[in-house]
Length: 347
Image (cartoon, rainbow, N blue to C red):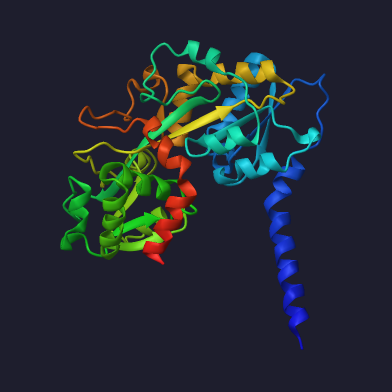
């Protein structure tokens, strides 16, 4: 009898959610006359927050080049592609910043991108992992993935198989690969090392070791910081945050005997850009050592430039082994299929 009330309530809630999702985009989408020196950059929220690298980089770029950066806040990095799909001619970004390697295939399907290899010429001391560079997207920072633990709480593992031991039962915090890029990293890591059949057998076995399966990296890591889990899958650089921002040296990284997965962040220039030359100038600007240092220090990721690391805590252990990002290509092509198979194991 009152079914229509529930339908109406649902529709209102859905409408409000969509408004909240796209409100920052609509607010930032007023047309800009070509006579104005304004570069419109679509990126994720943490990059443009006061504590993120965006504001400082924008100020320096404006002072040196006389070009204002107008940020378009997409919210979560995972929403960048959705925002691009809903763009109009009046709100076309000149540059998109914040894709990871898992997003690139879909980004290329969504639209065409300019070649950005010219920007790499300013980078004569690259420490980008092999395979990270792309002709149509600029890799500006990166980070290996691993487990983080607090010193003295647990003996760190050496291999993924160690995590199946009873001593790790209900100790791990992992992320859901359907919603989280780190969650997808862990899934692909296991499949890389073990192959598909044995990989999914392993994923079934490791369920007993999982304390929390979180929807996002941030929610899972917050739980870890509240000491409701003993080890969290996270970025290799996470302890640097605790050292530099909190003065806490108890957070440690696990260095495995086998290669680690890694996350690479990219920026790209849509072929439909209006201020294409300014966008190319900004990409080259981002690879300068002084700007790379800002990105490293505020994004807590490894920079593309070796010079930016010198004299900092962001050292790279020599024994750290890394996967070539290109090795993920086959798995990325089957992402939907593999995530569905993961769901069958966990739900």
